[in-house]
Length: 229
Image 1 (tube, rainbow, N blue to C red):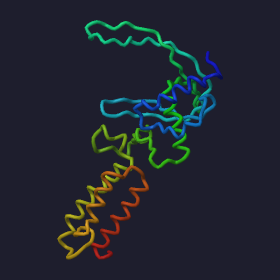
Image 2 (image 1 turned 180 degrees about the horizontal axis):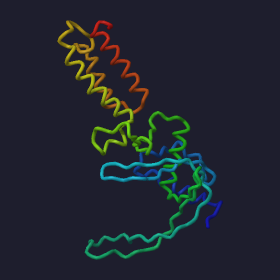
Image 3 (image 1 turned 90 degrees about the horizontal axis):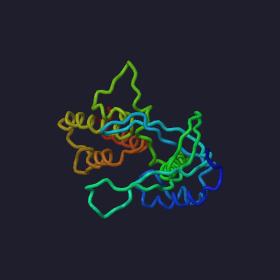
Image 4 (image 1 turned 120 degrees about the vertical axis):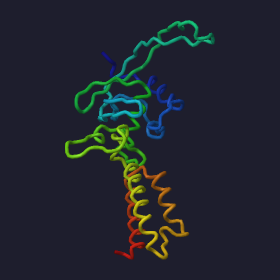
């Protein structure tokens, strides 16, 4: 059983705790105006596969329907050494109940709720810096193709940064063949256009728009080297 109202104090405490949370998902500006989690739309992350180097997750939209206090056992802080097991104490932990669009029930801690709220808002706002790089559908493979790189990188094979890395490798191969056939070119010359392009593809290609612009820049550079052919 859970309550369907009265979470204002618990929600405010969880919201204030975001300052000390180690999370790159939460954006305080998106949740600062909220006073309660009940009734809010969120985007929940479910880990479906976990490895030493990466995780595969499933994301679902949900609605917060209630909350309750859960009693957790935690070790008592002590300045003594870890020679003996620390004594345990019971603390009250607020958790929120949510129901996904597929009818799945889930309980969220304060940090998980703040992350889910930010996740939903950033996705709704089409935030260009937000991307679910560990989403399960990115790891999908069928019988007509397989990932030929490292197994740990398979889940990110379709992300913008992987496409940018493939472009850099392919450009290096093509450039080595063309540079001896061209007398003068702004792409690989002293202008530094090529070095700037490689740096941008390695360091800033986190969204498809940046990779698209990078591909057009590469196309123009190679067209110049081949005389527009």
